[in-house]
Image (cartoon, rainbow, N blue to C red; front, side, top):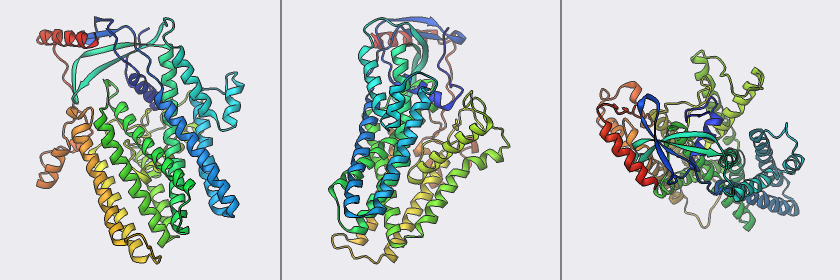
Length: 485
């Protein structure tokens, strides 16, 4: 049975399919076949297994943050700082438990006889044993020929534009198992980043400012947390691109990753610094600010769901009742809200859709989010500057205010540069960043239709006519075969 590469019935499995494509490399063996609607398809016989580097990196971040937090808790205990110790333990244990549950749920181990794996999860060492499993699978792959499990079909993107004919790759058992591991660890990286690392970084920075001295262990934990958050934000951005352009073979260049790292790093650093500085001057007022952000982003998908008068999506999980489906949706919206408190989530939830993801995200949503967040950060920084009573010896307060505002502006600039020049599917946009900015500056409201307000809305590609463009198709097939060889 041949399974085509189409959007799957569940958003989680769509992520899995996107990950499958990321571990595919062309081999010289290939043949030209006839696809649907008479389109020519280049069939690649086998795919090569790539190292599970994302699994290894996520495991290293998890273990490093856990060990650093444990050492810091020991220091807090010796110094008698019970409050800092308790909150540090809470921000370590909560995401760790959720990580174990996520890995167990993805791999469906509760109904299988795997006592060692379940015992490691009880010890909060599930990511370690899963990483060892992935490395063993990778080392054993390729030693003997494997029958393929499924076939994925993709179109190539070159310089942001679709080129050539569709290609098909056979996915073997090893690739499939590694894809499941990558999928699971990308989910856990997001959970660890925004349910553990962000509150941990906020807490340790607040403690450092209040105590006016830096512990070396605390600094190391803050750096690891910042790296974890940035990596989680990168995973969100890449998964959003892969899910949105599921029919294309998406590959990001190093310049795109560099631009995203600068964008996400500056955005998260400025946001955390603004919240922490505001909390040092107006300690109790930071609670309503945080809860307001949480409630707005948590209830936004539900309000849109009720406005559409839609019904609960089906097939979220076969064994789930309506109550179970509601609990899962609440957990998803909670994670969505926690991400948006600190940075742009890169996706919009649509609870009426069985994939839970809005298939046509709008540029207007992105513009409203960053405009609101920029003014909120400016207000928080100005309030801190007005009400701060501490005297900082080595810090110029007015210069720090200007630096934070400029850094967030630079984050927005790198975001615009990414969508304008580095996005892998930028040639598929109906309107790019330059068009949108020109429209806003010139106030030409009649040039764009309401449904075309987004830089993220792709163009509908015109499939070539097999009768009128046969020569072009044969040339594309020859080019693809030459490149594969």
